[in-house]
Structure formats: C-alpha cells, structure tokens
Image 1 (spheres, rainbow over the protein chains, first blue to last red):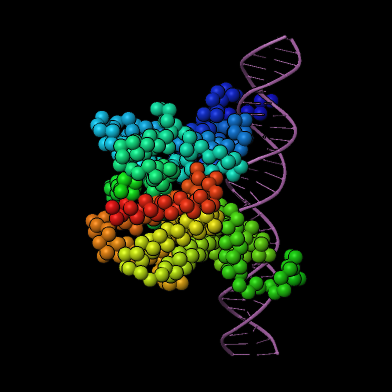
Image 2: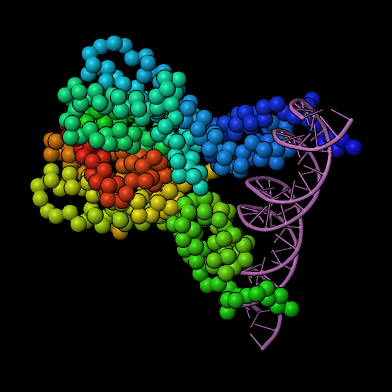
Length: 213
Length: 213
DNA sequence: TGACAGTGTTTACAGCGTTAACATCAAAGG
DNA sequence: CCTTTGATGTTAACGCTGTAAACACTGTCA
C-alpha cells in the first residue's frame, strides 16, 4: 500500500524543502511578523506534512531564526544600495551622507516591511548569539560596520570630538531603531508615510547634530 | 450534587477575580514578557478554572491589554518620581534635568523590568487606540506630557530653536526607546548594568546636543 | 541485489484559546 | 420566607498549535 495521503507533489521527495519552508516562513513573517510564522502553516503552504519540517529545522525557533537571518540580510542589502549610491565629495560630506544613508535605509526597510523587520529582531529563547549586528549585504559589510566607517570619518574630519566616538554606533542605532518601532507598532503607527520619511530625516539631523556639536 | 471539582477556595465565588487575574498576568509578563501571559496559566495561579477568566476579560488580548496598561502606569510612576525630585534652579537647568529624568527613568524601568516593559508596548490585534502615550502617573501627567513640558521650556529658554520644536518629543522618545530595546533584547543584551546606565546618559547627551546645537 | 541513509508521512499527545451548557451564589421582590 | 434572577464560577468539548515516535518511500553504494 502506498498510503499516498493526497500527495499532490509528483515525487515523494520534495527536492528543496528547506528553502521552500524558509520562503514560506518569510512570506508569513512579511504578512504578520514573527508570531505569524507558524510551522504547520508553512508546511501547509509548501504542500507537505507538518513533521517534514523537522528534517530541516530542529524546531519552530530554528525556522524563525532562519527567517530572522534572511530578513537581516535583506535589511543589509537595502542599506548597502543606498550606501553605494553616495556621490563623491569631500570626506566629511561623504561621511555625513553615509550616516544618512544607513539611517534612511534602516527606517525605510522597517516601514516597507514591518513584518520582516520585526521578525529580524526575533530573539531565540535558547541561543544567545544575536546575529542582528553581524549580517552583511552584498558588500560583505554589515550595517553596523558601515555605520562605524562613517563615524570614524566623522572623527578623522574633526567634526566629531574623539571623546564622543566610543559606542557612538549604538547611540545612532538606538535613535533610528526606536523611531522605526514607534512608527510600525507604537504611537506613531498612524503617521502617513511621507511624514514618517520626513521625520526620519529629522531623527538623523538630531543624531548628526548630537555628534558634531 | 455539588460537583465540587477540587475547589480549594472557601467560597464558590472568588471575590476579586479580575484583580487577581491581572496580578497573575503582571507576574507572568514580568517573568517572560507578553508572550508569557498565558490565560490558562493565569487562572491556574489564581486557583480557578480556565474559563472563569472570560467573565472578566473578553479574551486573552483583553487581559494582555490590561497588563499593558498597568505596566505603562508603572513606567509613568517611575518617571514621575524622578521628575518630582528635580531641585530648583534656573528654568533652563530645570528643563535639562527634566529631559534627563524622563530618559533616565524610561531606560531604568526597561532594564529593571524588561518583561513588563515589553508587555507595555503590546499592541492588540484589533484595537487601534494605543494607550502608550496616554498613561499617566500619580502626577496625572503622562511621560509624553512631562517630556513636552521640558522641551517647551527648551524653546522658551532660547536654547532650542523653535523650528526644531515640532515633534521633538518623538525624536527624543525614539532614541531612548530604541536604546532600551537594544539593551533588553537586542545586540546590547550582554552589556552590564552599570555600563548600560552610563551609555543611557550618553544617549540623553546626544539628544540634548541635537536639540540645542 | 540488498543494505542503508535521507527524507517525507502518519499517528498521537499535551497545551493553548475559546464556545456552549451547566452549577452556584447573593440579592431583590413577592 | 420563598422564589426568581443575574453575576460568577465549572465542566465538557473543539480546533489549533508544537512536537515525539514509528513507519514508508527512494536514491545510492557495496
């Protein structure tokens, strides 16, 4: 007996189930954030039995972590694109543009893909190695590294006191991260997109002024 | 037949089940954030059957919203205390201290009670009225209002250009909110408490410099 | 050809949120 | 004093979830 339980797929084996499940997980995260990436629903969308997922992911957290990693990579890619598009100029002007590019890309991704953005910052219950800071885009450099490059140049250009440099990445990151979250599920939820973009620039203005004052 | 299903409580009726469930919900949120406030577990801790909760809360979201409201009130209370402890001085000095008090209290609460802090920003699936901005402490004023008072005085004192005033509350809030989140479940998770406190002050420095530059 | 490792399926279980029907109690009205 | 009624708690049951265990199919290598 083949037991064939309504097997719509041609082969018994799927071929690339891991990627298919990850893609389904990304879709779910896009639609409803981390809470929406439900193991059974992912397998359903792929057309496979619930427990097939366990051949490729230890548990739901593992799938969600993979989704998180891919979302972080998308964020990095988006920031990379803005970063690479910066025209030549004085080192100072380029550094300022770099800081702006990182911040603008960060918030733009959060506003465009709130579900993926929230999933990106999912923290697995067991593991302690948050990869949020280490995922890199096509350039091979993470957003945090790009930010660091810009801030180092702030100091080299003499527009930022060296005393302010330590951990400045995290100060800038905080501002932009917090703003993104207030926009996507905080009190600024209702803010129309064009206004949110405008206020994003003011957040970056504040950070820049705070560093260079 | 009394059907008494292991009723350890003296009376059939509980007396103040709503508050008891809310307290259990707060405890759960404190221990594990919003995801940990599980309806059945709350009733279990109170010593009541699962469905008793539905006499007092429409559904799990309603309980979680109540927890969120109470957590926000705790946050407001904490900020109030710092705000009220500010010594007299020039209006400018007081305003600067007020800004600092709001930011410091905000992050301190997040670090002391990460679970409650995350639960405070739970957003119900249905409702759109986020109360995050409107919960007030004993003073009757919300943290957002306290922040606004300080920023208005920044302008009145002439240390902040009036052009920068609109929506400055949200810029400041973003920085502090983002920093708190990076600390409690972001890449700054490992930062020891004393260092986190120190960096908090630098976040506020940055905001202040960004406004008054 | 046959063993085997990889992958997918079925079955099963406990825990969750939630609905519906039932039980108990306190207070109000005759 | 008895009855009725509304508020509050309980039990039973359903479908959903994540997950473990046992089983089935299939390509590969001896």
